Length: 122
Image (tube, rainbow, N blue to C red):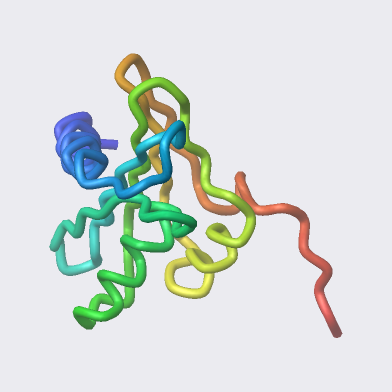
Protein backbone atom coordinates (compact mmCIF):
# COMPACT_ATOMS: atom_id res chain seq x y z
CA UNK A 1 0.00 0.00 0.00
CA UNK A 2 1.25 3.41 -0.98
CA UNK A 3 1.69 5.67 2.10
CA UNK A 4 1.31 8.81 -0.03
CA UNK A 5 -2.07 7.55 -1.29
CA UNK A 6 -3.20 6.82 2.28
CA UNK A 7 -2.13 10.29 3.40
CA UNK A 8 -3.99 11.89 0.47
CA UNK A 9 -7.20 9.99 1.22
CA UNK A 10 -6.97 10.82 4.93
CA UNK A 11 -6.50 14.51 4.12
CA UNK A 12 -9.53 14.52 1.79
CA UNK A 13 -11.63 12.79 4.46
CA UNK A 14 -10.39 15.19 7.16
CA UNK A 15 -11.38 18.19 5.04
CA UNK A 16 -14.75 16.55 4.38
CA UNK A 17 -15.43 16.41 8.13
CA UNK A 18 -15.25 20.22 8.23
CA UNK A 19 -18.65 20.29 6.51
CA UNK A 20 -20.43 17.84 8.82
CA UNK A 21 -23.99 18.90 9.64
CA UNK A 22 -24.92 17.40 12.98
CA UNK A 23 -27.03 17.84 16.05
CA UNK A 24 -25.04 19.18 19.03
CA UNK A 25 -22.73 16.66 20.70
CA UNK A 26 -22.49 14.34 17.68
CA UNK A 27 -19.09 13.43 16.23
CA UNK A 28 -18.09 14.92 12.88
CA UNK A 29 -16.80 12.39 10.37
CA UNK A 30 -15.37 12.78 6.92
CA UNK A 31 -15.00 10.27 4.12
CA UNK A 32 -13.07 10.02 0.90
CA UNK A 33 -13.59 7.46 -1.81
CA UNK A 34 -11.06 6.54 -4.48
CA UNK A 35 -12.98 5.52 -7.58
CA UNK A 36 -11.57 3.00 -10.03
CA UNK A 37 -10.82 5.84 -12.47
CA UNK A 38 -8.63 7.58 -9.80
CA UNK A 39 -11.22 10.27 -9.02
CA UNK A 40 -11.42 11.12 -5.30
CA UNK A 41 -14.83 12.01 -3.89
CA UNK A 42 -15.11 13.57 -0.40
CA UNK A 43 -18.10 13.92 1.90
CA UNK A 44 -19.17 14.15 5.54
CA UNK A 45 -21.87 12.83 7.83
CA UNK A 46 -25.15 14.74 7.69
CA UNK A 47 -27.75 14.29 10.45
CA UNK A 48 -28.46 10.54 10.49
CA UNK A 49 -26.57 9.85 7.26
CA UNK A 50 -23.16 8.36 7.89
CA UNK A 51 -20.15 9.65 6.00
CA UNK A 52 -19.85 6.24 4.29
CA UNK A 53 -23.39 6.48 2.93
CA UNK A 54 -23.08 10.10 1.88
CA UNK A 55 -19.80 9.62 -0.01
CA UNK A 56 -21.05 6.50 -1.82
CA UNK A 57 -24.33 8.13 -2.85
CA UNK A 58 -22.46 11.26 -3.92
CA UNK A 59 -20.08 9.21 -6.08
CA UNK A 60 -22.86 7.04 -7.53
CA UNK A 61 -24.94 10.11 -8.42
CA UNK A 62 -21.96 11.33 -10.47
CA UNK A 63 -21.71 7.98 -12.28
CA UNK A 64 -18.87 6.43 -10.27
CA UNK A 65 -19.89 2.87 -9.36
CA UNK A 66 -16.61 1.06 -8.63
CA UNK A 67 -14.27 1.98 -5.80
CA UNK A 68 -10.83 0.83 -4.66
CA UNK A 69 -10.47 2.64 -1.30
CA UNK A 70 -12.82 4.18 1.24
CA UNK A 71 -11.31 6.34 3.97
CA UNK A 72 -13.24 7.36 7.10
CA UNK A 73 -11.83 10.02 9.43
CA UNK A 74 -12.82 11.53 12.74
CA UNK A 75 -10.75 13.73 15.00
CA UNK A 76 -10.76 11.63 18.15
CA UNK A 77 -12.44 8.26 17.48
CA UNK A 78 -11.68 5.53 14.95
CA UNK A 79 -14.82 5.69 12.76
CA UNK A 80 -15.55 2.11 11.73
CA UNK A 81 -18.47 1.73 9.31
CA UNK A 82 -21.72 0.28 10.66
CA UNK A 83 -23.24 -2.94 9.33
CA UNK A 84 -25.68 -1.28 6.94
CA UNK A 85 -22.82 0.74 5.46
CA UNK A 86 -20.70 -2.39 5.00
CA UNK A 87 -23.60 -3.98 3.12
CA UNK A 88 -23.93 -0.90 0.89
CA UNK A 89 -20.19 -0.86 0.21
CA UNK A 90 -20.24 -4.57 -0.70
CA UNK A 91 -22.94 -3.96 -3.31
CA UNK A 92 -20.63 -1.61 -5.20
CA UNK A 93 -17.10 -2.90 -4.55
CA UNK A 94 -16.64 -6.19 -2.69
CA UNK A 95 -12.83 -5.96 -3.06
CA UNK A 96 -12.50 -2.44 -1.60
CA UNK A 97 -10.02 -1.60 1.13
CA UNK A 98 -11.23 0.55 4.02
CA UNK A 99 -9.00 3.00 5.87
CA UNK A 100 -10.21 4.17 9.29
CA UNK A 101 -8.30 7.06 10.79
CA UNK A 102 -8.20 9.76 13.42
CA UNK A 103 -5.67 12.49 14.07
CA UNK A 104 -3.28 10.01 15.71
CA UNK A 105 -3.41 6.77 13.74
CA UNK A 106 -4.99 4.75 10.96
CA UNK A 107 -5.79 1.14 10.11
CA UNK A 108 -6.40 -0.50 6.73
CA UNK A 109 -8.85 -3.38 6.34
CA UNK A 110 -10.24 -5.44 3.50
CA UNK A 111 -14.02 -5.25 3.38
CA UNK A 112 -14.46 -8.95 4.11
CA UNK A 113 -12.55 -8.52 7.40
CA UNK A 114 -15.25 -6.14 8.65
CA UNK A 115 -18.35 -7.89 7.29
CA UNK A 116 -20.28 -10.17 9.61
CA UNK A 117 -20.56 -13.79 8.59
CA UNK A 118 -23.37 -14.06 6.07
CA UNK A 119 -25.71 -16.94 5.48
CA UNK A 120 -25.41 -18.19 1.93
CA UNK A 121 -28.66 -19.34 0.36
CA UNK A 122 -28.33 -22.35 -1.94
